[in-house]
Length: 245
Image (tube, rainbow, N blue to C red; front, top):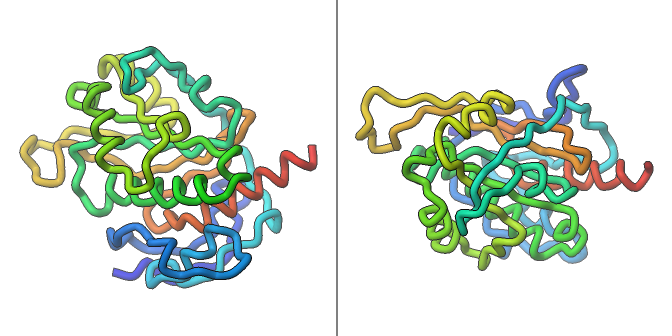
């Protein structure tokens, strides 16, 4: 299913969404190595696709409103060490998503992970983005996704040679510890009646958060908006904003 053509759009007082799109197709991650554009920003080498058949906005040609503060919370890193979410963001521009490793719904976590792998590729290839960007995925299934499970998941799923210092995989000690974090980010998660559902035991809304270095949420991406070119354009827009301050 095609997500539809896209065009620049700014919703006053709401999300700085730059696409008009329908449901996601679950297409695999872009392969940035297939389309080389000399002297182009790394993200533009992804090119247009059937799902993202538009030119991304020029960084700095628009503004991203603050959507509120990014919440903190105590989580566990893959070594089992307590980690403050704010400290994990490290004063950088952060892309944050809530996922769980048992999800196989092509319109769910695999789609989020495809985006993160694309962002990780850009982060590694572009020194400016590499210094500025932090990637964080937080599991909302702590009963299954222990630190050890997340460590294996990060290592086996990384096509780019995942750098654990730059892309953090975090979980919680208990569901009770995680609940206030999910509530603060308004991330809906529920258990399916059929725990043996082949797509995984949880229902959840796909939400990816862009957080600036001042710990403010500046955009929330959902199905149809997970174009790495768009996300990196937003990151570059925040970097230009910071340079003006």
